[in-house]
Amino acid sequence: MSRLEPSPDSLALQPAGGPFVLVRGVGEIASAVAHALFRAGVAVAMHEASAPTSCRRRMSFADAFFDGTAWLEEVRAWRVDNLAQLSRLLDTREAVPLLTMDFETVLAARRPGVLVDARMRKRALPEPQRGIVPLSIGIGPGFVAGATVDAVIESAWGDGLGSILWQGMAEPYGGEPQRVGGCGRERFVYTPHGGLFRSPCHVGDLVQAGDVIAYVGDTALRAPLTGRLRGLTRSGVPVQPGAKVIEVIPAGVEVQMSGLGWRPKRIAQGVLRAIERVHLPRAARAAPDKASAVTATAVPTSTGPKGWSSARANEKPAT
Image 1 (cartoon, rainbow, N blue to C red):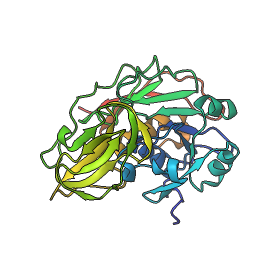
Image 2 (cartoon, rainbow, N blue to C red; image 1 turned 60 degrees about the vertical axis):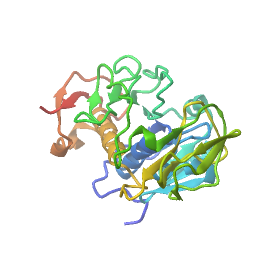
Image 3 (cartoon, rainbow, N blue to C red; image 1 turned 180 degrees about the horizontal axis):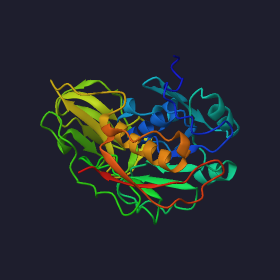
Image 4 (cartoon, rainbow, N blue to C red; image 1 turned 120 degrees about the horizontal axis):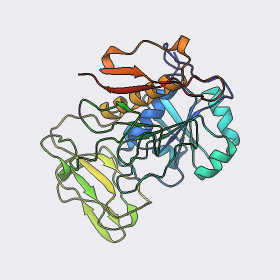
């Protein structure tokens, strides 16, 4: 099997030239969603119109925005600045296209069948996206299933992580990240103000507490503790106040530094299940995966795009 072939149990949800899934964002969660859909045989593209500030760049496709291409666990993303390239990449499956033009330009040129907002913008209320496409999915807080989007995927740690909500909202942000080596928020560095982010360091570098890792304007940003850089925003990117730009993993702690993280993968599987339940023809729909620990209850069907079933399900963590 080549690096770009779909997995043997490919869903093959969409024919050549047909509807595709557009994932908004290029961070680790958006990248995991695009990766899962691509490996499932789904025609998928990503969208990011401005330079991403993602710091876990080895766990995402973010560097494709700057370098033109990036690999993530055997799947490649290509930056696409010309919409003429989109159809070719969707049909040939050489890579996941990363679109960089205005969002409205993309919609006007080729409207997707599914829109997944995976931008994970904690400080910005997402705009309503329901009705823009046949199926809109929002990941995490800020979205209202049945109002601003059709479905919401839970992003909070816990038993409900990755579950599908067809009504209501996801859990609010808890405020504190998961602890690694006994360190929580203290392993991160956030920008004190906006400006141009500059750094001579690289992801994976060993650093000592107090080392200057980067600058925002003339303000030095120092390592909060001794360890290894897992997160580092790309040098030369404009950042807003409060942006997470540096993550240091404490010395002596073994933790994943690259590839798809467990949480992003679980969220991505939730997105895939939501799309299956709406668009996968009933005759081809697989039995629910017991490992997903969810239950489904059928609800009335609605009309979707040509060739796509629209039977939906409410999903909640199994009790």
